[in-house]
Image (cartoon, rainbow, N blue to C red; front, side):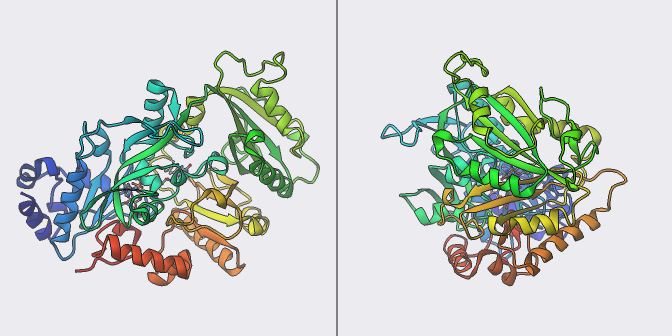
Amino acid sequence: MMLAYMDRATAAAEPEDAGELSPATMAAAAASAGDAAGRRVAAMDFGGLVRAVPAAVVRPASADDVASAIRAAALTPHLTVAARGNGHSVAGQAMAEGGLVLDMRSLAAAPSSSRRGVAQMQLVQCPEGGGGGCCFFADVPGGALWEEVLHWGVDNHGLAPASWTDYLRLTVGGTLSNGGVSGQSFRYGPQVSNVAELEVVTGDGEYRVCSRSSHPDLFFAVLGGLGQFGVITRARIPLHKAPKAVRWTRVVYASFADYTADAEWLVTRDPDAAFDYVEGFAFVNSDDPVNGWPSVPIPGGARFDASLLPAGAGPVLYCLEVALYQYDAHHRPDDDDDEDQGVASVSRRMMARLKYVRGLEFAADVGYVDFLSRVNRVEEEARRNGSWDAPHPWLNLFVSARDVADFDRAVIKGMLADGIDGPMLVYPMLKSKWDPNTSVALPEGEIFYLVALLRFCRPGGPAVDELVAQNGAILSACRANGYDYKAYFPSYRGGEAEWSRHFGAARWRRFVDRKARYDPLAILAPGQKIFPRAP
Ligand code: FAD
């Protein structure tokens, strides 16, 4: 059955002829002309800059299906296999030109996501009663969206993971293959630090369960491994008591030095004196609806009074965003009579010493799920105005705290002072919350910043090519100025030299060794353009 399908896909001179196939119905699909819609979708991603048409889209219903597809590809001299989460990459990382794309969302939809027949998402109790506040885990398919994990955990069990991304319509396998960061990362670690166990199908078609204690090298290789070592078919995520509500506050700075000093102070507090979430972004000092002040207030927030800005404020302002969780449903957020323990009071006290512009503070009390779903509103608006489906030439960097002030001067105030028609996130996290054994490449030094230039293209705005060229100029400036930085979601076309520079010599050697061990024919994740397929 598989060979009939492979012959067909392999023989397809034009990928368009191969049709879309499911392992469960391989023969039927191979015999049919197939619909091209799935391959058209898999040929694109959120970035909209790269197009690579696969020979076929495989819809696995189990880890066995994933293994079958990989083994079948290995029988050919050239076929590759890419796991596709939700296709939210921006540079073709989940594509496989002329190869097989595994639609991992179908694994999440299947009633049984593993050959052991576990239910789609399952609550698992920690064997030894748990440590670090965790007593339960969620076993989730690699193709589940974080949004699905959130609703399942909170609605059914009052439990939730600790570490998130800003936007939750990303898959578990997709973010674990990269890092998975948000305002919780400084405190709880990135998502790659919040996994207890993985079920992985490696590039040799072998199915393995790995963790810190069982096959640790594979476990760490896969985390942040850019899909190079195996396909994550299941992840075991620690769960914690879900907060009921969130005190969400934004404050504005005119000085980058004050902004970073306060942000770094906040992310280095002891846990019992720390916020649960610290993020921030740069915005333009103007009333531009997309790039300026109107992008700052939050639900329930007050009007932005620009007259409060200090004289001489520059072209760019900074907004620090913090959140404090509230666990007690009966406690009102502003319950000041109970020894001043309401989250609003606690939050205000924690912010009292910060040097933001007084009067430019915006606060709201929102439900926990609403808070985590906040980017959905952005998506809805972007879908309405067409910018969700337009190209997204995004650039994501980790910049060392050592160089972030220079980066701000040269890049944010220098090259991007008019804004980018989308968020410019700039917020710190701590390297000690990342395990050095994972495949993620980070700058030196304990504190580094996520700099995320999340460009949306608008009609009449700059041409996409110009924006891509500007991203290139930013990277050139980083290199020319000797900044200590790493690309997050790296995309290189220059081969080994660029990847070796990205990882650094020692980590690149480890990455190459791990590739030889787990995917010797370089079948997996060809869209990353790291290793050519071995015949
Ligand atoms: P895909 O783009 O489909 O895949 C990404 C890579 O992982 C590919 O190489 C693919 O082959 C591989 N892969 C996918 N699934 C698996 C699997 N099961 N096993 C092995 N390899 C796999 N990132 C953050 O860290 N924080 C954020 O706050 C954040 N916000 C975002 C907001 C938006 C609107 C968008 C579009 C992206 C955002 N991202 C964020 C980036 C996101 O983490 C990446 O796009 C990531 O690739 C996950 O997307 P995905 O699940 O669609 O994976």
